[in-house]
Length: 165
Image 1 (tube, rainbow, N blue to C red):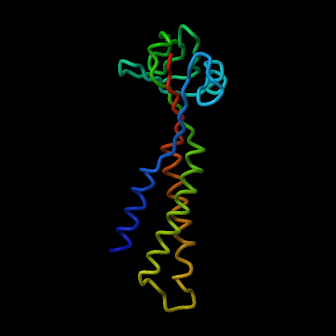
Image 2: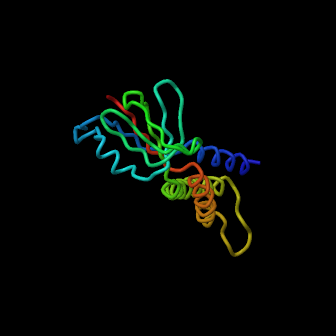
Image 3: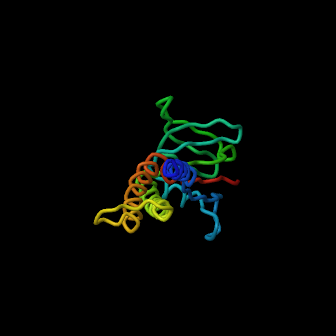
C-alpha cells in the first residue's frame, strides 16, 4: 500500500513540474531581459503557436510575424492568414515536445530513484542473491525516467512570449 501511495505521488509530481521559459517582447528590446520584434520573429519562425489576445480570446496557428503595427499568422481553424494590431497581443506560446521529454526524463530519473530508495529503506528487502535495497534506486530511476519522458513529451517545454507595447 505504501508503494502505491509513493507511485501516485510520483505521477502527480511529474504533472505539476512542467517546465517553461518566459520572455518579454517589446518593439526594440533592450538586449537584456527584453526581446525585440526582430529577435522574436527570428526565434519563432515557422513554429506552431497559441496566440492570446488582451480581450481573453486565443488562436492556434503558425508562422507568426510581428512588427510595430500588426501581428500576422496563419490560423489553423480558419485556414487563412489573420492579423491584429500588435498592441492587442497579450502572449504567444509555443511548445517543444522533445525538450519536454528530455526534461521529464531527467526529473523522472531523479525523483524515481529517490522514491524507490525511500521505499527500499522502509523495509522492502529480498531474501535471494539480489539485494533489492541496493537496486531499488536503479529500478526506480528507470521507471521514473520512462514515465517522466512520456509525460514531459506530452506536456512539452513551453516558451511564453509576453508583449508590451
